[in-house]
Amino acid sequence: MIRYAISCLGCKVNTYEAGSIQQALNAKGYIEVDFKEEADVYLVFTCAVTNTAASKSRQKINQAIRQNSSAIICVVGCYVQINAENMKENESIDILVGSSHKHDLPNLIEQVIKNKEKIVLVDDVRKEAEFEEMPLTHFEHQTRAYMKIQDGCNQFCSYCIIPYARGKERSLPLEKVIENTKQLAKNHKEIVLAGIHTGRYGADCGETLAHCIEVMLNEVPELMRVRISSIEITEISDELIELMKKSSRIAHHLHIPLQSGCDETLKRMNRPYTTNEFYARIEEIRKSLPGISISTDLIVGFPQETEEEFDKTVEFLKKCKFTFLHVFPFSPKTGTAAEKMMEQVPDSIKKQRVQTCSSLSKKLYYEYKSSFINKKVSVLVEEIQEENSFGHSSEYLPVTIEGVQQRNEIVEITISHMIKDNLVGKKEG
Image 1: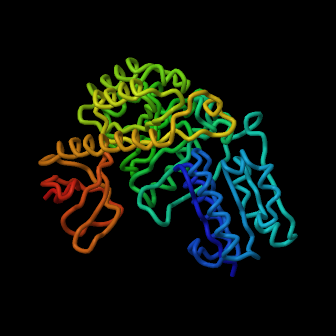
Image 2: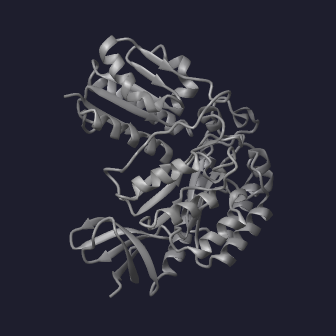
Image 3: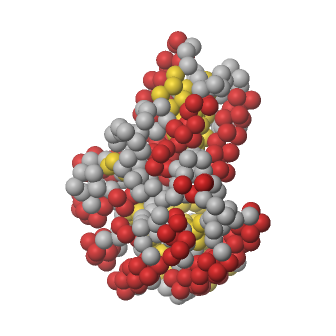
């Protein structure tokens, strides 16, 4: 029996792709083991969105080589796509696959087993790329399913390497989305729509994300909840908001990346909106969908970010009243416009700004969660914890449920109190 181990870093798209390969290898009779164990084949799905992610990718590759120097080492994804020339020199790596040809990994592994020859497949995805279909019927280790419906990005924010790593925007045809939804809904009550630029779904084929979701809900009645992984403020259409108003089966949570609350910084970042435009749209969303959870991403310490600019960002964050913030210190990526910008901010100042915004995030999150005491929420049961259950609400709030509930079911819960910032409630009836 061939034993294999997978390490997956980065986004939900990577998780989906790794899950598809896991399912294909299992179907061939391979046996999955933990990445810390000795295996015959190691697969590392890499990430390059930050320097930290790139460093972790290298660590996982080296870990696999140390654990079994005679194993087949297969390295996949964004880090490979932008570092292929350097990685070709590593004799311990047997398979290098960039942002295409991932669906063929099981066959490539068997080729290496048979021929003992290194394989390198790294195309120029900016010139030519098709949406790569990677079927997946269920996730073995999680109740919430991800479904990749979009890939690539055409936005070219000045700090981001992903358009170079993932290539041009492309979408899974709607009929394939429905086909995949029907399969996943047999095993999962909630599906998270994932993409590199999810809100741009269908831009290359005359579709829209809102229409896609509407068709999913109509044609797959057993699907109880659809969640959007992340969406840009410029892509939240009136059509999508109206659909969310009409259907409780769409999660009451939007993760909308802001990146900075200062117009001067946003301009240097090449972001396609001003703070006034962002806030006006947030207000429109909240007017139509009262109580909706809106979280965001933030980069602090961007080149030339002064104390005054940072203070503007902090005040804007308070004004927007986000549910929580994902805060990142700026990390210069080779090949991006921001890497070459003058007046890079010292790491010590970045660290202070991360701490300031993380503290604000905790305060905002506590206030939002507190507002749900004595209210009803709809929770996907994900874990059984001794005499209680645990899951996330439609608003993506973590909830402890008193008593044991059926895993992978969505239940109505009345929140009664909080323990150490955690919401606690009981099932209705």
